[in-house]
Length: 276
Image (cartoon, rainbow, N blue to C red):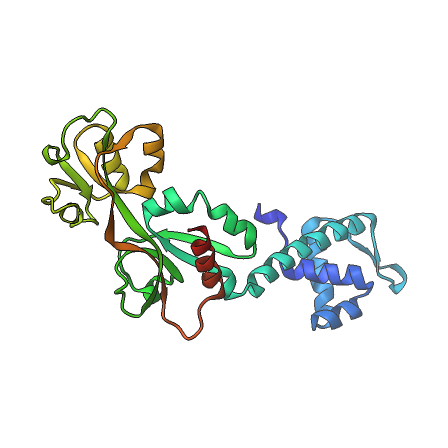
């Protein structure tokens, strides 16, 4: 395809001559000599195998082919210019790099994110998955949704919501919680100890989805964040088998401590808090 895409230098020279009606005016606009512009146009005509200008009687007039080509090339150059201008002039505070917990992202954030996009169509969102604390600077991230305690050094943590844990089992479970296999997330190692003085978990799972499926399959009773299993409870795949309790760890919006925060990050934080 390269043979059908002339150099931008040749196209800019042709476009200028076509618009301004002369080589001298085009040379002035492009900060080139008249001969340099003439050479560029001649090279373009050679590549195309046709004359674009009628140079008779010292006048520069577009041929029929040249006039058609000039109109189309002018549109193409405008598209390239506008696309480049949009990138070059896009402010840093219109790009937001967000770290999000995988399950929180799929279960809570993504079903709602279209509302933020509708309110702020000028902000470009880039999502990545992170679990736990990390170095904001080396990761080039602006904001994170984080689960834990507000003890992240050099980071401002804003509470989103407390975490209500609930013991759940498969719909057909009819035994006692005390007798069942105790399942929990790897990131909630003390969950069963916090639940009425019970002993620790018999099995831990790294990912929420795996834990939920294990519980639905009847392997045991799981302690889970209630808001993340609303769909399973509503469908009857899971049922509660004990009292709820508030976990010590909670969900926070984390931002690196800076004299001035990214404006897009502030808009995102306030939108999330309003959704909660």
